[in-house]
Amino acid sequence: MQQREDFLLKAYELGIIKFGNFTLKSGIESPFYVDLRPLSSSPQLLKTLSNNLLELVENSPFELICGVPYAALPMGTTMSLASGIPLIIKRKENKGYGTKRMVEGVYHDGQNCLLVEDVITSGQSLLETIDEIEREGLKVTDIVVVLDREQGGIQKLKAKGYTVHTLFTINEAIDILHRYHRLDDADLARIKNFLNNPPAPPEIKRVPLEQKNINHPVGKRLIEIALKKKSNLIASADVISSAELIRLAEEVGDYIVALKLHTDIIKDFSFDLIDKLKQIAREKEFLLFEDRKFADIGNTQELQFKEGIYKIGSWADMITSHVIAGEESLKVFENLGVVAIVEMSSKGTLTDDYYITKALNVAENAPNVMGAVAQRKISDDLLLFTPGVNISSSADGKGQQYNTPERVCKNYHTDFMIVGRGIYQSANAAESAKEYQTKGWQAYLESLN
Ligand code: 6AU
Image 1 (cartoon, protein in one colour):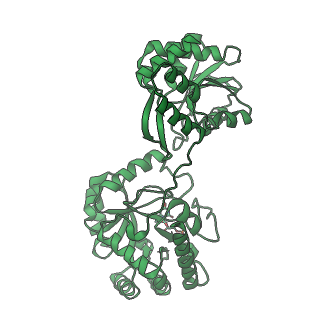
Image 2 (cartoon, protein in one colour):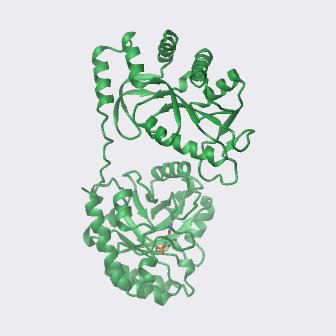
Image 3 (tube, rainbow, N blue to C red):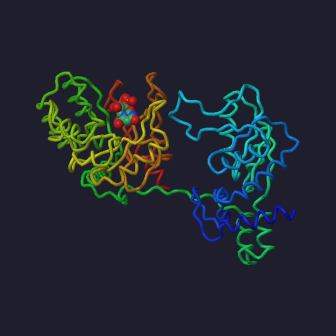
């Protein structure tokens, strides 16, 4: 017992638990913060910890050890060195690495693998890790955890048949620190109160369109049109002739804020078509949105934007661009409204969480980027455009995945939904556009509450 307490006090000196006011990832305000990574900076403590963890599983049958990355990786390694039981390494990346193995090391089907985790909270991430290990043909029966935050994780794993061995619960750790005067009575009461009555995560409120922090004039104009027409609908006019495009623009123009084009699919493209579209756009009040999805170095993008057959820069109000070439490559679009593609709607897209985070970073820093295409909530400083919206279909057999207007408005806080085939392939495009406009605006209004 004394040994465990000694360990905890020394680990506390290293900074594994901090007291104060911390905003957790979930948005909850917590009076303490736990981070076991500093333990790697003390080889002696890491050894003591590993011995303690091995003692917990003395009677469990396991042939491999796997530390859940990253905090438990050095713990698993130290346990492997101390026990002579081989280590395997689970990759952290779980998307976009289809051909690479998810678990590295020498192992074979049916071997029992002990999982090592630093902190267990809801148990969700451990369950995902177990799933990945089991998919490699390995067996998981036991898990050792340094600290249980007592938020239901243990119960969740037990219910699935796993045995979880914990070194400390958060209540025990707090009691020890209080007993040894690292925590005063008032702080103890505050923390116990937090642990006994865990607050629900704050609901992220949607910012109404008129209050969004959008400085780009095209973004402002789009919001103005949306509020005036009571529409968050962009029609994607993926038709292949000028006649069809003009007819569609006339039919749906009253219900939309922008008409999205792929000019390179139009077989008889001409500037007469553009003049006609501009005229309809003026009359019916919508913007012209060229979905070019630029994805090259700045110089090439500039040529694609200004030159060639389409001379996009001379007529479009807004365009889409990937941000894969970095922030500087976007300058060439000058003051046009740029919508950054940060996440795609299709099944198996390579835009994983890591890419999306970096792409959003680029989008937020580039002054001419006014919004992003994505399937998730993003910063209120950008307008969110979500394609893959269809009321009557869930997929197209070519990778496209569909959501309903309600789902994107309520779950993602989408500002503008993009609808293609749901409108232009319907028997009556005008009626369908009207339906999407009504449903989309209704879902937007409801999502404000
Ligand atoms: O409603 P659909 O599936 O007929 O059409 C969706 C439209 C197409 C796609 O090129 C486009 O939205 N799109 C985009 C955009 C707008 O950039 C990104 C994406 O991830 N998925 C997607 O479908 O014109």
